[in-house]
Image (tube, rainbow, N blue to C red; front, side, top):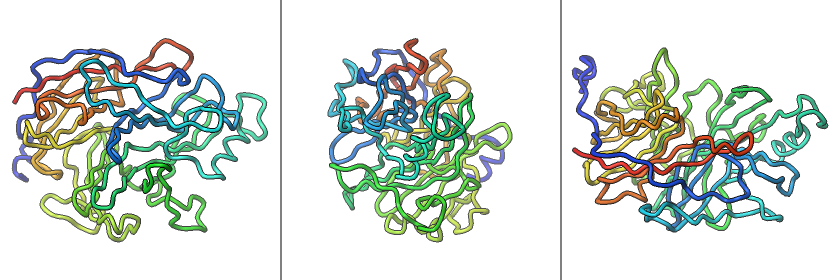
Amino acid sequence: MLLSLMLGCRPAGPHVASAEEVAVVEQNDTIQGRDGGGSGDAWGKHVWVYGDTVLNDVDENGINWHGNSFSITDDVDATDGVGPFAEPGDSIGQPLEFVPPTDDELAFNLAHWGSEDCEEEPCGARWAVWPSEPFWDEARQQALVTYSLIYAEPGDYNFEGVGGSVAVWHDPKARPERPVLDPDAEHPDLLWDADAPSWGATSRVEGDLFYTFACDQRGLERKCLLARVPVDELHDLGAWEYRTRSDWSSDLDDAVSLFAGSNIMSLSWNDWLDAYLLVYAEGGKVKARTAPELWGEWSQENVLYDSGDDPYDVNHHAELEEDDGRVQYVTYSRSSGEGWFGTEFPLVRIVLER
């Protein structure tokens, strides 16, 4: 493995027999637009999770911009599109956030709400939680959800991550819970600070271990690291290990880049390929790699689909796959042309070949 990486020779990646857009994913009329859209299973339901979400009307708190949202469906037959979706609502029926803000974050957002006439300057400043889809932990009948805490002010790309953590979803009738790790900290729930790798690009629970990738920009590439931790020690940073060239180390400095990827990826085991399938966007194209193990050796990246839409939040949805994984369905957000943040999610059917 080491020699092949040094020489730049990776195994061949997945190839495509055909790829075409077949539908647009159904969306609640209360939603103007959102991004993200990864999906995961929890308690037999298929949960789609989104990032920033703009509503057409205000919620029970009088605001229409949420840091995230989610939709739930039983539909696993994508031949006629995907849906309908159910969306748990607040007291007036507006969609709830999947991982909600803390009381302090909500109070801050309400005080700064508005473009000009807000209670506190700067108007439009906000805290946002950007979560992943749920990663199901069968042994404990719970789901794990990585998330980043974001501080944002008005303006294009005027936001910064202040850290991240892993929420735990214990109860299907409730929402994921953010841990309290240090009650005296400014952000008591954060496992990682802003200087840590951005863990949560994609994750997976296997047995008693939780695995997660971080793909931060280094030079011209997003170089991807892999970490793992026993699920029962999830919020003990000292229990985490990091993948080296050939083993695991408790020292983050020993971690090596396994491949170049993206900070938004989706991962599944594919029976038809007999390998893990990793899908992401890079250079405006939908790309994929495969590997026999989570730590590699990861294949070359191959283009699955060129949409022309310059996507950044590509996800494949393993629950929709056909023929043991030979047929995959991929989504991403693009402008719908409605409102200032209007989006839609095309559904792309991709037939793989070995």
